[in-house]
Length: 42
Image (cartoon, rainbow, N blue to C red):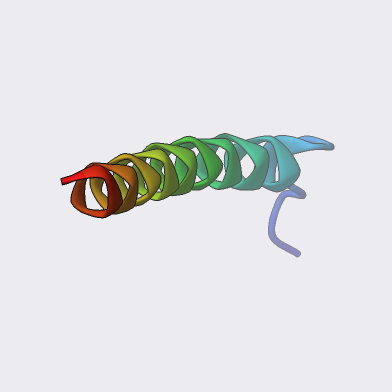
């Protein structure tokens, strides 16, 4: 029987990647909103 992974090991990694994705999405959305505001104002 293979050894069991430590509790929370995968969920911690998943939370780490999810957190990075959320940050990237936030930056992209902010950039899109900034570009839209620029073109509307221009």
